[in-house]
Image 1 (cartoon, rainbow, N blue to C red):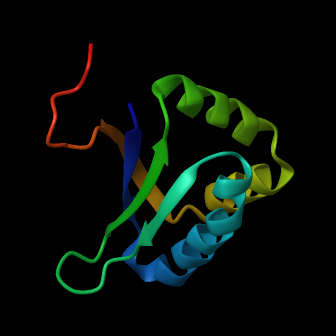
Image 2: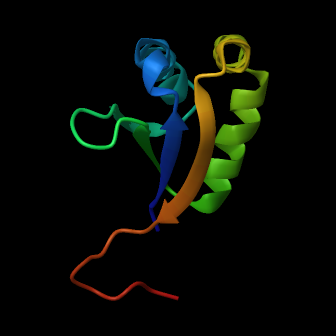
Length: 107
């Protein structure tokens, strides 16, 4: 069963462009590490400090394997370091979702 990881970021709205650079970097890193990236979204109107990302995986086990690959990826490590140094991410939450389909999921 496919799962989608929805990441909800609370960002510093005064560092929106720094977060956009961080998100653009993931556009190549995440697929290279095995995630099916649906995209990153920045606030446009309304709430100015919430950004989202959505990444799908064939299973939770595949997500765990992806996380292991991401930890050893040089470009990923550089992107994490940049975020830590610039402190534009105030918090993040991960929610794991499954799609609703016409047929019931099989146990």
